[in-house]
Image: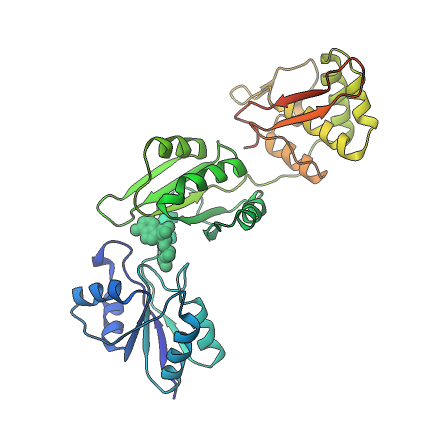
Length: 346
Ligand code: SAM
């Protein structure tokens, strides 16, 4: 009869977090498969366990996995440990679990330390629904695709990051989600210098620009606001455009030309219009003071964002700028709008 593969979580900092069941499983297993045998040996010495160790890591997992499977099929029990935390969570182990499952070997996970759950629980952000994103790729294209795919994610998002890559990741998150988005950084969890930084992406970038990051980090990012039904009709947007923006231009020709131009330019015109309008929205009073028109349907930026996106328009966000060519004689060749209101896009 085949043996059992036990997934044994190990402390992410504090050695006292090893549970009696984990220790017992390590002591009773026929052998232990470890990501780094030197790291695991320290833990085993602390627990006064002497046991044969085999190495199972990212770079030998195909070969080592086959050997471990053969021993399991021959009836031995194996305890899989990684350097810290729960095996198979951004750690080697996922492939071994699959191999066992495909070959009828029972896999038994023992609950225990896991950095993402520990960080989420102390984040102060919604925990009801969350998504674990692991490490962002260092490859620029896949990193960008990953982040773009998360732009509208409403669930709390959790990322792992190494200290030397933290600042770049925070900058990329800020560029994707906007500087006002809330983030909790959980550093050195369960260790002597455990730290929680509850801030915004702008705040985190500023902090770690001043203070070089050290130690291990989990990033817990608030999701986008839930979308509600759009309340703005295309007619209202057009009306807003013509009544608010066009009269404000030195010459309305260009503005009106946009509306009859290609679909893309029309979309851009809406986006400019509504983004510009929102840049005048004062969240403290809930009022928009830009022009003498009724903006009531647009003063809720969540709804407006939903409306824009439902109409295939990527809205301008804080700090975005948009360039457009003027074809009317009276207009400069290139104009730039830059949105500035930090309330926009939340
Ligand atoms: N399997 C592990 C788990 O269950 O959390 C994760 C392993 S992954 C290779 C290592 C990453 O987990 C680190 O780069 C860091 O993002 C996070 N991490 C691990 N220990 C941590 C700690 N004590 N404090 C903060 N983050 C930690």
